[in-house]
Image 1 (spheres, rainbow, N blue to C red):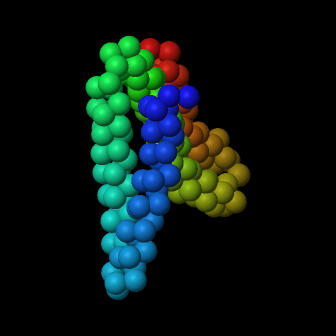
Image 2 (cartoon, one colour):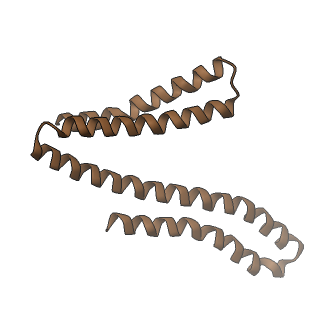
Image 3 (cartoon, rainbow, N blue to C red):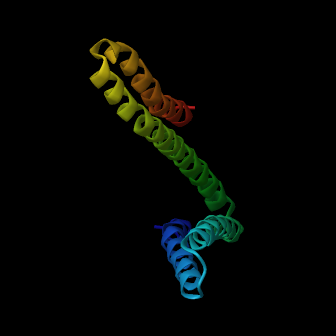
Length: 143
């Protein structure tokens, strides 16, 4: 295991613990929970980006072969990260759509059993969001 792998392995826990610390400090100083969550998210994103950029530049300066390997590993990692985020965000959107559509479909079906087919179409439309996310993730991974 080289220094780059160790650094990339340690970045997520460091960023998460720092973001949790910032959120807890916000709550203890009297800020609202929503504001604390905004600080938590901003700290997590910015600290992760800074740590990845710092580790990549510091470790890549030492050896050109290691830098090429690190760039390749970083590109693969970003590819998998983007595919995972694509699936996650699409699934969350599909869940929100289904949370609104399924109760309406159940209500419409209970009032008129003939409306089941129409209600099923609207529920399926919400589910296609998650399927599109999975398809795009496969396209990203295989690109």
